[in-house]
Image 1 (cartoon, helix red, strand yellow):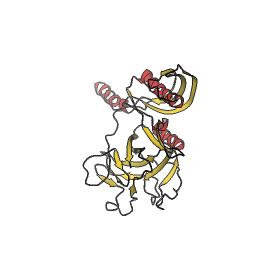
Image 2 (cartoon, one colour):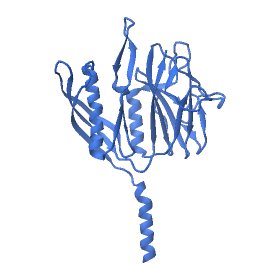
Image 3 (cartoon, one colour):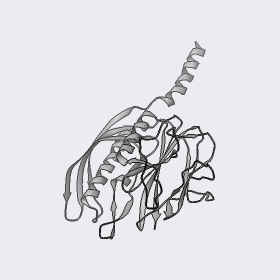
Image 4 (tube, helix red, strand yellow):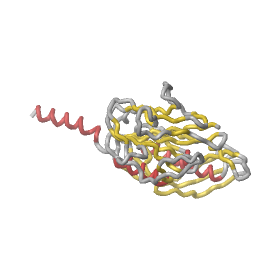
Amino acid sequence: MKHVCLLLLLLNLVVSPLAAAKVVSLSITYEYKSNDRKESQEDAEKRAIERAKQKALEDKFGVDVSNIIVQVERSNDAGKSHSYSDDFFSMGGTSSRGEWLQTTKEEVLTSIHDGELWHVKVYVEGTGRERVGEPIDIKAEFINSPAEKRGRTTFYDGNDLFLRFQSPVAGALCVYLVDGNKDAYCLLPYMSSSTGCQTIEANKEYLFFSSVADVSADEYTLNTQLEQEQNILYVVFSPNRFTKANDTQGGQNWREEQLPRTLKYEPFLRWLSANQIKDEQMVVRTEVVTIVK
């Protein structure tokens, strides 16, 4: 009997950390007060919704949530550039204890300007999940040259883009770039691939987007027509097989080069959310890169 009890105890220790985390419904009414007199009503409402999601996660899982707001430069019809905050560049990043998975409802209840600042009240519904165990420790560094030792977040117009990647376990990898027009470009797997994902071997360092490392590689150059702009790079890895989003062949750019396969940002997020819900071991890394003219 002692042996049986010990066996049951060992089984419990093994199984418990792997138990699936339950996807739960989250909802919150949240009030936001702007601290920037230059903030527009649209930006204040968008920021209120993002902070509502953060607060819902904190209340449910006790997680610390960091937020990245990126200022995007665009030119208007008169050729003058202006800055603004776009919710598409507002990303909630959680610790390993919780994550926001999907938004099912967003509503601005009130939006009042007191003469200087905006006071916004919103209601948000969605789903979240507590993380189980530690995420897989992948290495994903975006660089301008294979000789660079460290990843970078600032590139210049005309710079090449490479990805140095390594994982301690075998799996599948996809990489997407999202631009200011809310287009999500599939950088990896390459356009010639018919498998829908890039296979990764354990403990092997890869250099992607280099024809020297792989003759079938697609090579990329970062360009901008603005003084400065930001893109988001998504690195999606899992030890479990998955396939890229259902995108379509890209068009032609100003240099008459073929663009990567693409889809709009909202269906891309739906694809990403569905995969994260299904696969708790999936790791999603985001990197905001600045391209300077």
